[in-house]
Image (cartoon, rainbow, N blue to C red; front, top):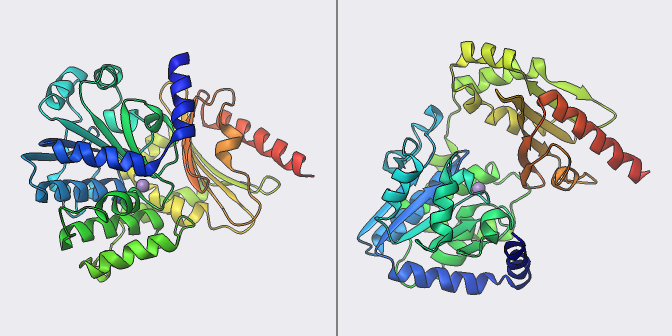
Length: 369
Ligand SMILES: [Mn+2]
């Protein structure tokens, strides 16, 4: 592991995205059969960018290109344009997936820094297969330089831009000599950017995001169509349910929703077993919008007594970066994402996690004064 760590540090110090892009282009040029894995949790950026990469490679004359996911696609995505092109490989065992993978000569993973989010819940053998150099891997992402980026067998095209779509467009597609962007690719990427920026509203938007969006519109992306996305009624009903359960701690500027196993049963009765698919809008329109509450937390208990959490933090002004507060803390094995939106896992249940977070925030505020 020490060698791995040394290599990580080396890679971090010497990382050069132009060089990574060049090496990625080399691999892309020579590959004939390419498998693209979208990440979990599913979103417009993951699917839209995956489909755009697939379309681009297909048009570049590859023999075979497949966009796929190791996780099932939730019902909320049935209307997502092109979703039927994404092959679900969720049921495959690790051995079966490796068998599938062996039929391709390049693997692309995108829109996540974490292996489990692309390779599936069980992935040790798959990762070993990749680590052994059995299959070249390109990683395209915007989540900062974490696990996948640090794997020395991976060529990682990674930059902290609004979306993976923006990274892919900026570093690979815009510079591509082989193909001019067509309407379908433009549409996929535009939708991906719209999704990850909340219609150009979030703080991850920069001048370059607008420049890319502008070029995508020029290339035929349909802004009117993508602005007309409806929200599933369940997502609205979920907000109604969740608002009543949301708790507030004014001193810590913290609002939080803990979903216990008992409440999960209740949610299952209302929304079915897919209840977790409907929280997106609550996070977007409630968690980060209440004045005086800079930190919005969504946490739900796992059957084994642990919990999963995510946050939406107000970015403007003096707010703590929850990544820094929680990284390496006791009972927090995993934390990632962005300053404004991220999440992780906790070895304790949801209430236990809230206690940890409150302590961390209290320390943070005490240090400020
Ligand atoms: Mn993304």
